[in-house]
Length: 490
Image (cartoon, rainbow, N blue to C red):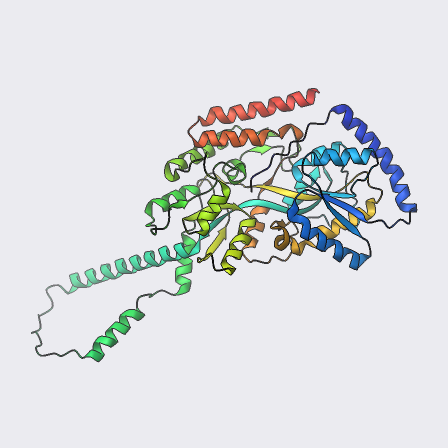
């Protein structure tokens, strides 16, 4: 999934201050009205991603049946979505009690008064229910300002059928080598001690004996157990990208395989893991302007290793597309690839329809090298309670319901992973996605870093094509820090 840059104009200091002041005064009045009012008008939740339509619709029905409160989901345009909510809230026109947004916008929503510290009357947002990554994603300046709902991150897929074929071939080669060594040793030990026996003439081999020999030979075609083959195949899954490159050198690929490793080198979501272990943009919560480190010895070393992979895999960054990457994997043209979590559901659907004839596996993203670790990027979708809502308690209760009681349907209906750790997963391999998310870093929230991802994506593309790593990373860091300085001076 391509990271979509949300074009949100930086709200001026005057507008933010006015919005916050109005938010507090309006909220104080609305809280009193909410307590005294007996109005049971439906809660309204706005969202921009059509993929959530079925999920929110079923949640609304379930919630009314359980708690007697109506909820009305409303699909809105993504263009100036947050500005529309703020404008309608300040003018007291029709506005939502809740809305969905990604975690990288939570600084803007908090500074404008659209989000404040959640009530969380049931105490659901904790490290028992959600991983630390999810809690960090919805935290701003030490306060939890939204409820973590779902996420997308990148994981590695591999063609299990191909790996098991390679594993069987390796086991056979090892067996043949061992038998050859044993036979050679036996010959050497017996050499000179044996007296040649006279040839036996007139021995007749019957058809029954030939058939028996052929049957024995056929039964010995696969002398290895399924467990042995699977264990060897798993040992072939690379722990680092340098190990993957070494595997590519030695692997005798089937005719239909065009690339051992094929991924979208142009999309930062599927390449951030190369530098994610050593790049710091705002700390773990992505909200600390003092923590900015994009250009350092480790990120340089990681990007140099990334650049060297171009010599091995020769992927054209100008023409590669995520959809074609996934399609090639499903056609058996590649063995390893990097995808978003929704790809697993797509492959399972293809398997059910008989279109995908292979077995596949899911694994964590490999490290860059044995010494340089990787760390993936994740994007968390949050349920936000509108700070201007007159039904704060009811809205918080529904947000808690969405993210906990109704979380099991998220992957089936939306194609995103539920943030809730205990949520039921419809596919066993999705557990790998959960593990990957737990160690990932969330998109930062600072408005001053909005353009960072465009700069980083452009920079990574330039590095892939051969640009100087030092100069490129330094330029990105300098531009980011300069933007922070400008924003702080306004």
